[in-house]
Image (cartoon, rainbow, N blue to C red):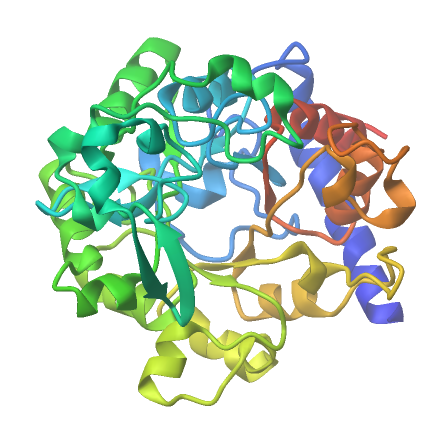
Length: 399
């Protein structure tokens, strides 16, 4: 523990040095051009951990640390995976936008939805012409009932409109129900180009391949479709501002053979077995992947990991934060960056000791939670509230 605390203090000192000018220059809002804060210095103040690739020749090393990643956009303020949510995340100062949980259509297009089942994120139930499409399927071993993107063409999906996924926690977001359609990922790539031009800085995106084993068995392999789009738009290189992630390590490994982009393996709870491992008979769980040996293996084909926040700081039986694990230290020693998920402001999602009242849509001490996670030395964090994340980072690096 003493060694880990020492590492955290060193990383925190370097972080404050690196980011102070960038955050102060942001006027409390949007950051300046990506890369301005670093001046060639890496996470630990001792130089970069190799050429990680990315836009403008600087790649991930050109991003502020800790980076603020707009989770499905600014999904705490707008229905997720809409252009309204994506653009608001940029307006709020997000360094990266998770523009795309990617799932395929029947005619082979990739679209941006949280899951292939769209009953909870669109108005499809109100479309009587699609009533007969409702069915029950088994997705990664879980029976799920609803409407699925693979049963629709892109043109059909374009007749639907996005709705708030968790209205009980975000009743204010329901104001925007029906305003935006479902984005196709090809539209996201064009949007990325336009936003970069309009904002005068390189806009980064962080798409996720959802359930790739499930879709491959349906004859809709998503890795090849994503690689084809990235090649078509010239964003398949190590210097491209597109980070690709998946919960399935074999999918990430497959992408490493198709494109040069930085890649990340998402990691769920310690006891969880990735679905592709279940399908192939690999007995390992997340607990095996976060050992020094497991992290070394991930580093052979990926540039980072996206662990759940509980793998960074576990919670006790009452839901309160405990002591940080060694994961940040071990991942950095393996040369990996860490972008854990997901920081949200609402009480039910925060550690119990940082909640304020019992309202499901009430905000707790999100700044205290951000501060605790930043102190571990993470390289960034996914958040539904990028405005809060940007302010919390400013507090942290200038304290």
